Picture (tube, rainbow, N blue to C red):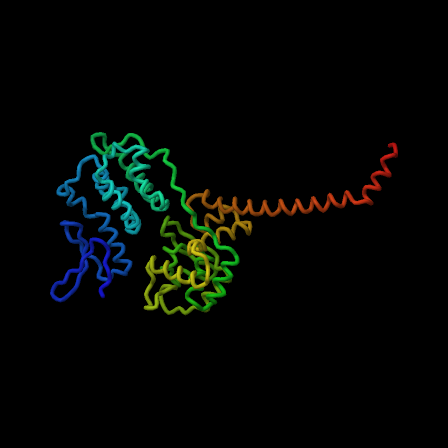
Length: 369
């Protein structure tokens, strides 16, 4: 049975060959890569979904000037959008499409806090993560609207989203020591799962980076890579536990971690691979692959690393991100030391109030000095 295709994707049979193409309504067909499971297909599909060809056909779409749909077209023509990396555009695609489809008819100048909260974010009350993503995308569009010429009907002179609180989302947490031990028991050194785990735990790479790491990036004494999210170069020392894991893993391919078909993972494919490994280790659902990066930050802070050192090791762009780890470490350390001091104080107090101690005190009370 043929694989079910994403929305707006169709199979075209021409001269005995099958092609995949993207077409929304009666719009133009956009050729897509033949493998719907590949990373190339995902990027091309998201780009088509985002309407990157929209500027060529805007005049025939009947978009009303001054609406969110018109603002989206304007933004996608701007340097702020065209200068983005293809993967960033792909990440924006679904959010842009949601705003275009569900709220494209709304006038930009008619946006208010109440309308954004109730009309746009309200339907996602039970999905705070989705609400936050949509709010971030809307704010990008609003910032673009504030840069437009005064004659543009999408022009905004103030930010109607100012003051709207970010939806509270559950932050990905670091793994506990017992969870790390459970994973290592289930996946010993020499398994693909343990190798991927070691890279994430001892280098701090996110899934978008680890799935494409190559052996050339692992040099004697260190590991170097460039963070996909920020473009920041990272160079960290080669931890002995990572070195041990890599020593038992075959160097048969350019990339370190590969699929059973000897090809590099896609980002989503690697995520599924790690989630399956985590479940097989009997760990809870809130134990996420990205939590290993958080674990490295926690461990470095507990070891006394400075915020600047953590910032360099994890490739953060601001010191505030790294300082969070040191603050949490100080809090844990302070809480433990406080209880130890309380115990010491209690022991000292008991010593001072023993019968022998009280007797000595009473004996000396009658003497003059």
